[in-house]
Image (tube, rainbow, N blue to C red; front, side, top):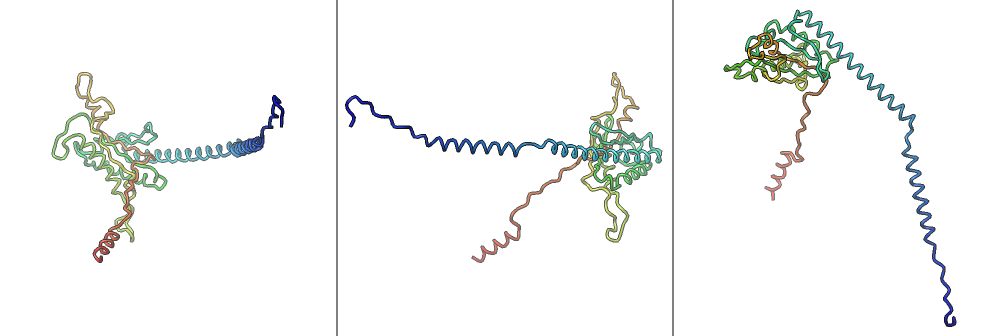
Length: 264
């Protein structure tokens, strides 16, 4: 027993927890080293893959450009062979589409959506070219345009109906085009799937040139230019596929449940 006033001896601290702490730190360090080694990018492999992808994209782009140039050249030949150089203007737009601007007076009877006889061979030639299998990924959007003059009759109450009717006439001409009849299909198969075609009417809202001068006087030459139909040919999808919801239960299931209920 210690005498009075003698200090008690201090017990040593228990430092066993340091071992557990050190083990935990070591494990964490090993984990992060492992993660760093796994996530390290092989720059050479990355560059090789990137170069291969760029090469593929370049080849595909060049291929599409060649197809587009071939289409333009062949359609231009068709227009020239039909003597329609003054009635059809070829160009491109900001989206990369091939555009064919059809003169309204040359292709349609006045104030109607009925085709002129001289327009039919030109459209048939364009259809024959665009039905080529290499153009299957291209879609055709047809726009109808009028001048600012007013129309009001039983068939076309306004320029909206007239412009849409002219665009629809061209689209229907494409839609009605078929292959030669055969034993399996006496009518022939459609050359163009419906989802490759679209008709739009703009009336006089998008004039190519001013319809009138500064004094509001009509300019007949300009109005004639504004009466037109524009075909835009590109690879951009026109319609999105509609997903129709389906029900988990069918009418047969409902009838079966109903029959069970009657038996009870």
